[in-house]
Image 1 (cartoon, rainbow, N blue to C red):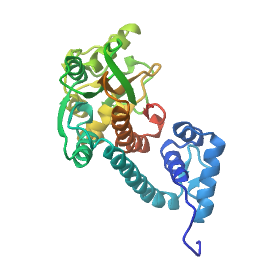
Image 2 (image 1 turned 90 degrees about the vertical axis):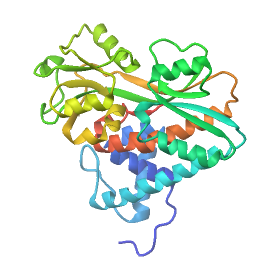
Image 3 (image 1 turned 120 degrees about the vertical axis):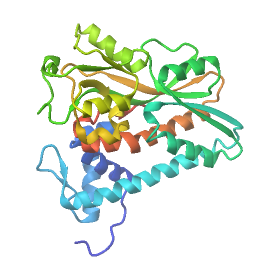
Image 4 (image 1 turned 90 degrees about the horizontal axis):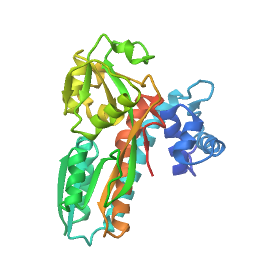
Length: 323
């Protein structure tokens, strides 16, 4: 045990440790943090030396924290979360001159990211009239085109969005959701799921159209006649053993109440994903959308990417922040 409190701990080293713990790989952690694997390894070794404890069991594959590492990890993630929230608060202060802000956010984020964003905006924009619309992506994009919203967080459609400027926020991979225990491992092909009907997202929604287009391109037609426009209902049916679905990591995060009754697996073909982005019309100075996009990325990292990849390390890299 070290005789004195450790000094010289860097935030970057703490980020490396937290990301290695999530991904189980120095290479994946380095890629996520935009550094070389050797630099990431050096940062981790310096942190372990400063603390006087081994934090990662380097003899295991995938890499895992040691007992001391797990204890320290709780405090590291809490501290990094506080630092990110502080950076968001300072950035939002630069928006204090705004008098009106009309924001739309995809309903996939309504339980995790949106409440914190609205709270931070309200605290920073004390003289600003702020309004929020929560809706599916296609409706938000329509409102943006009509000029009734200033900014919208929505899934990227398959066709370019004319007249709007995009700032990517999150890559959200598609996955297979099945009732808990239905499969012991990821399916080799969709025929493995023939014992259950396929539950479909409505094609009124962008997510439903993207899944349908991918299946049609691959000439796949899983059987099932139930079409839904509610993520919660879809997960409720999967949890109840009524079918299986193609969904996303974000959809899983939103369906928190059903997560213990649902298993998530990789798709049995080359993965595909959707992009969640911040959209705006022309005319805004880049500082304002840049601050909002940066705040959203940090919230998505802390509230979605890190918790989901911590419990399912195989999603690291697929579920990621888009800069």
